Image (cartoon, rainbow, N blue to C red; front, side, top):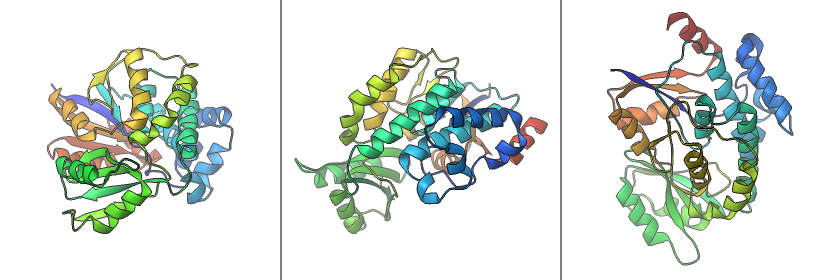
Length: 308
């Protein structure tokens, strides 16, 4: 029997103008976008619609903007039945909204705080991330172990697809990997435009503050399984999900294993909801036989609502 998973992208998919079409022409989406505006301590709609790429790209702004865009698309879609949901890093919070674990107005405040804590964890220039192309996980992990010292670390952070692993850690080691990566066997090493060593053990410095903050919100059991980044399995228990969202800050995103777990459960259709087709591209590299649908814009929403 055919099964469907709805999936949500993370940081890096944002672009100025995102969700403007939804705001002007879809009432259900407009309601979500206005909710975000009332919950935020900055003008999130102006940042999404007309501000600079630089301002939108600041972690504390990007995270609520992406969650809001994907949630608005989700709200606008009719006849959307899913068996599972999954998100990549920040996108996992949209999965929690989709499955009823968190109310949207709580989730948008949580990711704003998450972004602020992540951005403030290290001064600029201390930590960073880079994508390593053309090597498998074991080879990347071995390189990271060789480069790491007692004082500085570099670790696999996003296990995205075969031959595409993002690593995270101290910028000095990231720079060394960028300079020497080809000599170490990588096809390419591409630095990412991020301000910190996300999904590395360095991020444990914000664990306590984040755990305390999210305690004030209600977490509900999921209405259908959320495949979690930390261990690549479906969960419905609110306590387990919440605990794993704290661990997610400083643990690798197990995207290959998560995708494979869904396929093993019988999922043959992945619907990516949010700006860009990053996750669809990764899934193609993991398994070419599954069906992929991308819903990014008002036109995509209309097409789905009219045809499905």
